[in-house]
Image 1 (cartoon, rainbow, N blue to C red):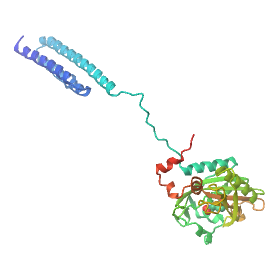
Image 2 (cartoon, rainbow, N blue to C red):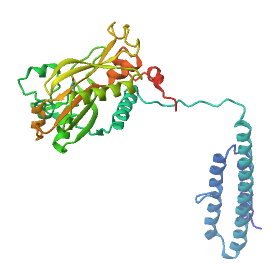
Image 3 (cartoon, protein in one colour):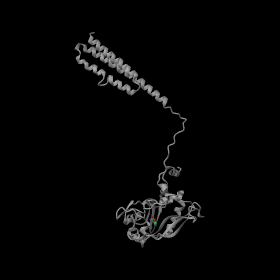
Image 4 (cartoon, rainbow, N blue to C red):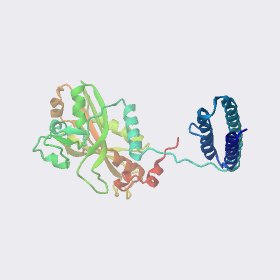
Length: 349
Ligand code: DAH
């Protein structure tokens, strides 16, 4: 063995020793992998030895090649063994630290609940669907025609002052009442009509019982021979299902441009059974909705023969019903999204 060969031998030996040392010292799989790449990677030390092959006299090449191959095999075995040990250790550590105590009480995940307005809306839809009403939804952005004019409220009509309107342009507005959907329903369908239209409405109005956005539920029945008696019978049924089994309703004369006659509907106070309490302000009655016999002009505006057909309509505020039903005294509670408040309305199921 000449000096040069001895030098090569020494270097190979050294590489082996260093590699073994680095493998031993690697604390985790990542460090080990980096070390392995330094020795066995494409730019690694073993590769560098290979590259030297071309400078070695041809007759020496086989033995030098064998030495490098032997070194590579040893390193591979070394790193593989170390990797195995590290993996075992890491797994062991995991098993020791990630103990599962099956006696620990479970963590409860909070369960969501329907918003009280949604609850009431669903109940109303159930009640009226049970009486054969079909859902018919109209757009929230309406034209002046559907929201007012077709409902017998032309431009200079004083009843426009009953509702403070958000206008988008001269002709477009945010609907102030779901009554607008009545017109769309009557334009689309021929009598008999029995439709229910829930949805959002908007008014420039804001205090403890009014909010600029709220929900209404509109009902419309058009057929031959519809009278106030049909309205009253349906309202009684609604009050009994929505409030309590012995709820009663009473009608008081009122005015709406789209109904004639028009009525305000009161339900007997379910808190005191009609005796008089703070909720009903001592009267025993609570106002819940507006209704009436559809004004023949409205039927005519929709191309329905008012001599042949008649109808009744009603409209109620969903928030108002929710407030009455659950004893909520401020409408803002319904839009503040305080989960402590909303969590009280979980339905048992
Ligand atoms: N649209 C009325 C309002 O917002 C409520 C109403 C009253 C609707 C009488 C009706 C009705 O259909 O017949 O105040």
